[in-house]
Image (cartoon, rainbow, N blue to C red):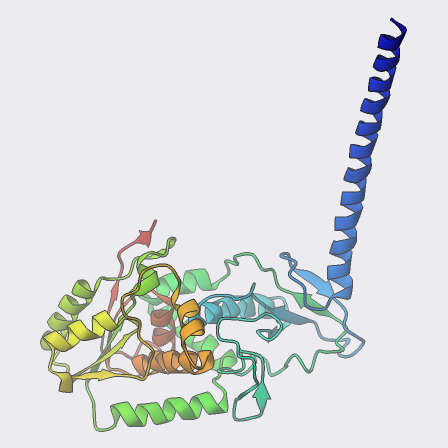
Amino acid sequence: MLSQGKAYINKGFADKMKIKKIFFWKICKKIYYKLKYLHQKHLVKFDLLEEEHAKQFGNKFPDKTFYIIRRRPPACGLLSNFHWVLNHTIYSISKGFIPVVDMENYKTFYSENFPVETGNGKTLNSWEYYFQQPCGYSLTDIKKAKKVIFCELKYFVGELQDVANETCSGTIAVSKYHSFLSQYFKFNQKTTEYMRNAKERFFTDKKNILGVLHRGTDMKITKAHYTPASIDQTLQKTQEIFQKENFDYIFLLTEEQEALDKFYEIFNRKEIIVNDQQRIKGFNGERGVPDIIQRTSPSAYKSGLDYLTGVYLLSQCDGIIAPKVNGTYFALGLNNNKYRYSYIFDLGINL
């Protein structure tokens, strides 16, 4: 009887100790994560905290508030990253902040391990591989800035959401998009020269060009995006418009080798213009295009430059056939609605 009572007392004591131990570790855990949060927020300059938050790097520029535009590494495709930046730039300027794009501390699929020449110096910031900073300030300028805000890393829906949805049908949206591009999104010197040379190389002595954008590969299986046209749909519409509108040439922009091969089967090769761009054959749906480019290209930067130049050439055509994708928005914005003919596939959202 005594031993049973003793065992009961010991068990009760053990249970109490177990509860205290659990409670103790819960408190320790909370303290640990709180200290980790404070360390990231106040001591580590370039953190991965998801919410928007402020930091102080030094005491320079006390009258300015800088807004770091970042995206969780390795981000996404080149023009997806571009529109992320555009969206945050619209937001930051509306708040009176100065946007500075950071794709150096926040790497992308296009980031290289060595500095890239831009025409005005070298950089490890993959945004600056192709573009100037929106307001002229760089990461170097804000190393000791007093007021710095880091943008949120969650999916950001800003004013561009409406602009993008309307760009394919509304002249006001296109004009607004073009105006913002012209003011805040200039190509750097090397990109500008590369594009100019490409236009001379591919479009010299060629006029009346129908630009066709075919997005296949990962876009066919990506959810919550507009459904791209199939190769057959793109071919059928191109044949119809090429004859009906009396175009002389077709500029085909595609990352899918199968699409290019089918165009060659239907049209005279002398009528088709293609740019320098890596094309994917036999896409199996396992990886996205940016990841494939990063793994297989000698230079991810060069692959991005060729794609961006292709979209620029698309904007220089006389007509356009394209799906609702980032490349289309960008081409329409650069063109400022000057196409004499345009057809944008609207096949709904891929759910």
